[in-house]
Image (cartoon, rainbow over all chains, first blue to last red; front, side, top):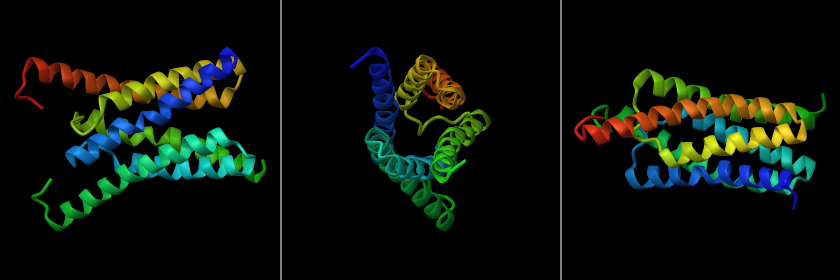
Length: 94
Length: 94
């Protein structure tokens, strides 16, 4: 593995793994107040598109990285939408 | 442009643009409570690595997408670190 591949691999691991602490934080604290629903909706949809793109191009790293990151963003999006729904039913809750 | 390129372009626009509403929300509300500092530190570092990877491979789309997204994540990270610093100096603040 040369330096270029190593740089790309490290970049992929960082940007994919970055979603882990946010997902843990949301599940632990149930706090999604500062999170943007639009951001996570776009990230989720975008990552589904990346997986599709990877499938068309038979690019395993693109499929893997975006499947993992997309699933984590999907969890965060779900928790955010759940909080928005609950807030709508009971405006005084968090 | 064929369907594959279109899928990739749409994916890139979505995952890059996704950072815009979160950045606007953080700047407007100054609320970073639910955001994970580790997530934004990893995203920022990862995107710097992606830019480096793009420069080595002379891949303009990779450079552009990650410069934009990386700058936005940098702003969010800065606001989060500022909030953590302020909280440390005054534990009763938000």
